[in-house]
Image (cartoon, rainbow, N blue to C red):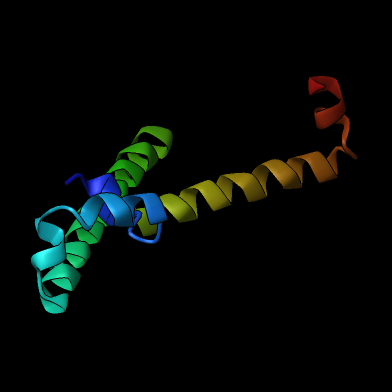
Length: 93
């Protein structure tokens, strides 16, 4: 039984496959525990990937500080573009 099957328990094909395995013999509480564990593992993995991407993109590991820096640079870019009456964007394009 794979993690993908656990994450797609609503799929009729998956339900049919799992009905012929030990999954069918587990209690509801045990099934819920396994599903929560797998979902937690994937959530943690996705968070780690997002942290690494943010660190690579902004050079800052702290999410709040990275958001402030990225937002601040966007404000600065838009302010310069507005002060130059859109010429910077036009020249770049």
